[in-house]
Length: 358
Length: 136
Image (cartoon, rainbow over all chains, first blue to last red; front, side, top):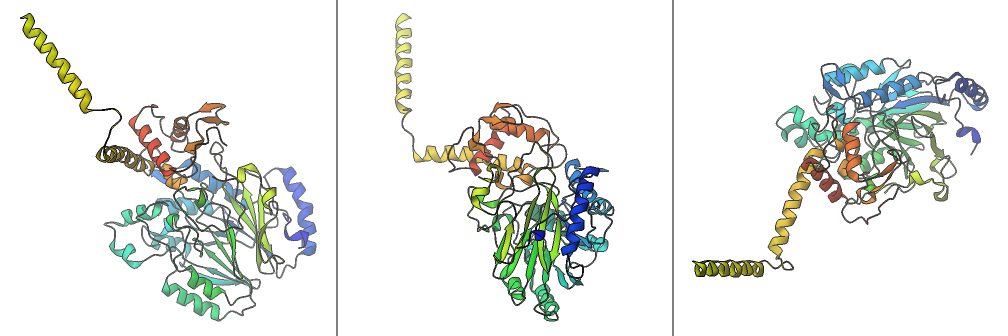
């Protein structure tokens, strides 16, 4: 594949002027390759988990992650066409958390689209979130790419409406990742019918990029790295030549290829999660092509967290993982291999000891 | 009087011998094992409750937020050289580090029942994994 597909294209590594100056020539070179009508850049921030303590106090650690991602995102040169926030802005879905998170995100200089996370949803079923950020699901077109935003964190009606004595209890039960009282995520019949109609109007050669919170694939049910009706949603994407799903929720580098659908996960700004196969009592179905992120070192508060710059080239995405305390990673679709490939660690023998998870 | 005393002493000896005979150190029943396992599991359960509680520190953060099912805690690798602390430590020192920093709380005494409960839960979730002391 062409080298320019993987280059950093002027992403600024830090706010320092030296970094900015060294980034500039790269971006100039890149412009020579880029077809501005077809190729563009977006940015992706996700899983901030803003957590209210009391009064005006919020958990400092999670605040810092989002503040830093927003500040770095604003330094992107060239600027992204838009930003996506991938869900779980709040920890327990309260107005305090959503307002505080929205205020921090308001510093972004770019148009921002929002994806619903379960931590935003299960207190008031997304009502206040919707007041701030708009519809739970919708689609839009940008420079020849059809973008779809799903609310993939719905679940069985009985669990949502009849199981819990209060909305707060329902929120707490869904907020515990490993809570056996939780319930599997799903897009649901109503939204799938909307998606079917939405995609019916789109030419099959048009690149489709779906943004969801949960993976739209089945990885590990115990932690809801899972979408119950993933197969049905995948079936709707299957007729397209270039479908991609970008998802949050998992707080880790993951990528996968199922048929013609490419999947890539984004990092959290708040905290990293272990890979499901490291849970000794679980038997997860983990994407075998993923080269893991480094094992987190908790002594570095922002380790294994970050955000993403995304290059969209001819409808395929390359994620530039901007990792606060680690070496950045770049993972993008390789047309020759027909799947996402890691630029720096493509082969098992090139991996480094911190990528060994156990 | 002396005779009464002698008889009494003999009685104590016999009773003591009898008790020693009744509770042989190398013999226990399935019921015993079940009871002991039950005692352990009740402490594991307390540990799980603490693990998912926002009350352990001061900022509402729970251990389970970063460590679902206590994953990525590696109890089988302790004691080990914790590079960030610069010395060999048991798991309990790392539990205390987490209580003090991400949870913005106080360290527990190393024999605090809460500490024992947390360690019991972490280790139980890791059951079946081979010991690997010192491993990074």
